[in-house]
Image (cartoon, rainbow, N blue to C red):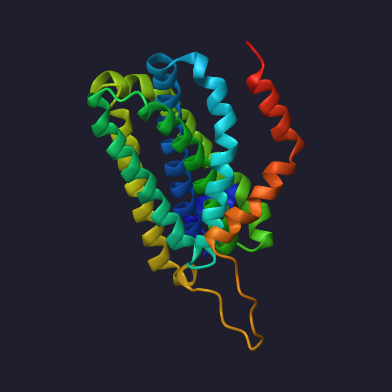
Length: 245
């Protein structure tokens, strides 16, 4: 396998294992995203109402700002690989809870899931890039990142075509359980990569210079609020939102 990768894709000796693990993680990430995105979009439009979609597009940027502020606070406290594993588990658990609450008929579950799928895509995608940056140097990145992303999109395409077939077998709502399973598997892959490549779990080394006190999650959210109030784009979105349709 290593010789074949080296010959056709310029994956050199010693890189094959790292490359294949990273491709597998990318495939799981994108496969989970395509499942939860398709389900959330379809269920929201069919069960909650297409007329509420503009409201979700208005709310989602605010949810994203808060999520990124929280993520920033977490990233200064733990290694990126561990945080990525926790995020996979977090979104998996939340999705599992939503799946088991669906029979109760709570309409609010669908806008919540719509926001969750957007944040899951943004957060896990960002943390994956952070992980890849720790794994590969600049020269390796130029050679391997396009292959890693191509492998990920291959899984994305396969799951896109396979979703109707899977849905017919297990039921539409149970697609969320498939996402949960993929999230757990992705978390286990990250943990295994941490065991194989232990440098991923090493925190920043302490230097002799005193470090500035880093802002916590609460401070990050507070710092983002003036930007929200001064943003011309957000003001335009507010005007468009209150105009009659």
